[in-house]
Image (cartoon, rainbow, N blue to C red; front, side, top):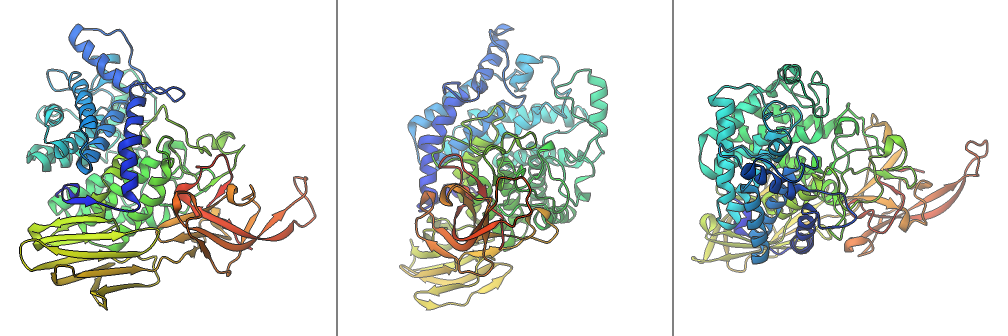
Length: 639
């Protein structure tokens, strides 16, 4: 599976400024936080942990203590991976030098036998591999493996790759060669090992990934045994609650998405990836079942997943509360990983539709427009003075903080945005698939004998222009598959200005033929805003309406509605109008007629609320919370 970042030169009205912001603002800011150089935000100490581990290896002790979460190493790994994608897109000697220095710090913390983990080197020496349930050794290894592969792809430098191959070999020896029992409490390495396998060609890494996947499903028996025998505890989570970490059933028998949502979608990503590599039909069917469980009954309109604070987890079918939604940013990122792998298994437009929804709403909403503040939790309703304050809602902050003690989400957003081309396009079976609409030039010399330039201002408009440029012959022999989004009432295609009727199959338009220099295709997608209604079993959304324009979910924010969102009611039939550039980030604002109800000061009253007509103003969900503290609602009661 070739990297699209290598053959795609991005030039996109929406994502190019985001990529530049990642390079010039987000990565430097996050590096400074990881080095504890930013005042007024939660301390990281992640880089210092690696320095301390190296000092322990050199001197037998260090002058500082381990600080932070047991998985603090993974923050550095995700930052390195995000930086690698940025370097692929835009060479930057200064950023590359910073990465090389960071890699040197990481490498210095590796034991002679290949082991690498700062928590167990600095804080718990002698206890490695004794708490797989909670201590995240294998999880951290997975993230650093992903960083190593990405950095080698971007720069050709293999220092970190060599370090992580040694660690992967150490893990293989421990669990396969020596036959020690166990598997990750927090999944991630399963998908990382498959990336490492494709990069190196080393079959043992694929074997180890399959081993970890196939070992799950003992109903928590291993973790219970581990808990009894080790005699020490990190958090003391109940090992007899196997759904939390998806050990309740063997992976091929799992049908409902359960437990910690990030762990779940990382697991499902590994399952789908292995199924694509091996052709395992039972694994494929399990992935289909889990996808349907999420999207039919356990997913927010925004593509957010995991509705409960307790366990950061999926709960029950149709339980999708708005005000207390968890919908962790990392879960949306991981969901995109899973959906990308589902598209490898089978080309179904609904997978790409869902991936797009999760990306534009669940992921992008996790980062402030300035790139320096982040949401961990993404509620669909916010009430200042209650959200982030009341006991059941302390997790649902109404404003993005600068950082977190558990800072998994900020670098996760950066690495997904930096690699968006990998999600937008794929080259398979001699065809170019476009899953997301992303502008730039794609090198298809090997397959088609030329390049294709895509120009668009999506999601502001649905007008997408493809221009063909043969490089060696007079014509390009093209096989192109373009996703036709399910949200659009109408989509048209023109070839050189004339209507073109492609072959349509499962949400993709297949276009084949010979194209000369300057030939064009134009895709016009109807981006009209539409009302959305929830299933009647979603109690939180009964009698309410939401709004979607293209892939963007819209919300009402108090800033645009006289400070009061809770009193708004929306018309079921009034036309939806657009104000071009009226929303933050230059996106269209939507307006629709409705009313506002007001009551007296009594908590309860026999007097009916007063009602006045108003025009509701709505902005894209990903842009909320950028203009100060304000009420916000996605689902609005109807009149």
